[in-house]
Image (cartoon, rainbow, N blue to C red; front, side):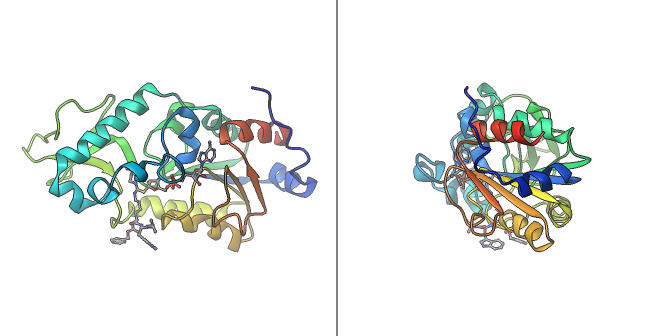
Length: 248
Ligand code: BV8
């Protein structure tokens, strides 16, 4: 793909700050996986247009109808299994070796950052390739989509996806680690998130209020756009490779 020329959109001052940065983080949302063919939640064709999140992404929805929720997670596992990380994931993985300190803070549960080679990843909303017993908390790692719905624990209780649903707290170690990273980041890239789901959406503001630089990549404005030092509009799989060519 012909890479886009961003040189007129990125000031020398911002480029210099990024080149000198020692601690860098990237907050990602569903938009970073859009070019891998994974539907986003909001915006045109988004998941929530077709599915009722109350039934599928809340604890009470799951307990009311675990089969329905598992049908949806199994469908997503099959989609993710067939899909590949895209250029955006690969550039983010390349960035990790370039900066002295680097972390990926992801809201995504698809595991694509790890498949693309990223190592220091904070999974804010869990991972679709892990499931957990609702009774005793037993964790089972998956390397392929579940076959039997609902999957059962050895104790006989049902297993749930090991993800964070609406109304559930994020894993304390994840949100604490992510908040520390955000406060200490010289630069935070915010890629492919609508920035409306909290507490993840509060992370870029932590970087900003601590004096760090926030650089956003999205196809449309979000609440972060108002305070980002720079927003590059365009698909992450096109913008990030072009941006990285300028920086490195
Ligand atoms: C909690 C499950 C409390 C996993 C998901 C204030 C403070 C705290 C909480 C709240 C609060 N206000 C409201 C709340 C409650 C709620 C919330 O934030 N609601 C929102 C909707 C207002 N938050 C919660 O419930 C959280 N829990 O706070 O608990 C608590 C504390 C103690 C004790 C008890 C309770 C839990 C939130 C997690 C919910 N889980 N999913 C799964 O199945 O995936 S949410 C879901 O949204 C995903 O996790 C997703 O990652 C997340 C965020 O969405 P995005 O990733 O941003 O995706 P989206 O589709 O929205 O946007 C895509 C973006 O990409 C768009 O901007 C688009 O323009 C862009 N894009 C598209 N294509 C491209 C692109 N960009 C670049 N390139 C492209 N090609």
